[in-house]
Amino acid sequence: MIALASLALAGCGGTQKPAAASPEEQTVRRVAEGYVEAIAGHQWARACASASAQVQADVQREAEQNGARATSCVSAWQALERKGIAVAGTASSVRIGDVSVRGDVATVEVLVMGSAHTSYAVREHGQWKLAEDRRGGSG
Image (cartoon, rainbow, N blue to C red; front, side, top):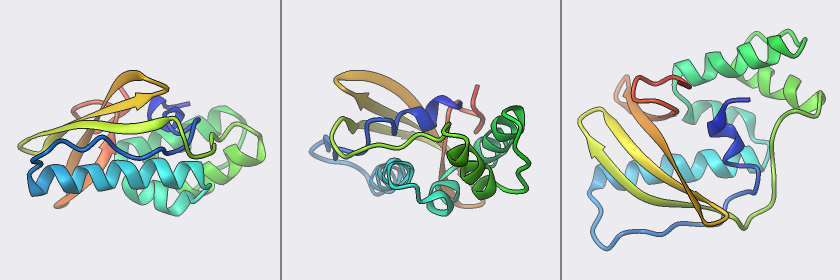
């Protein structure tokens, strides 16, 4: 399973917002928070809308590797959920930490039960999408 999705295992617990974030950083933060909330709530269309094209393709590939036929990111998540593989959780242990934007790539610090993980967001067609590497994929 792609690591970005596993960040939602514990659900969404809010943010640790820095004192002065740029409008771009605020936008990326909202995308990251929305993604985590969507995964935790089994809102697959919302999760896919927040993910980069490469991450969406990775979710489909994950479903197919687990014996499911998936024609879209949403159908892949649904198939993974039916197989008991899709992650979800309750609100409490995931926090979005620092967000830093450089051009069309943002670094997103994700705190899971106190442990920091780095994820990314990339600008695709003018919109920020979550990714697992700087190129938009899952590394």
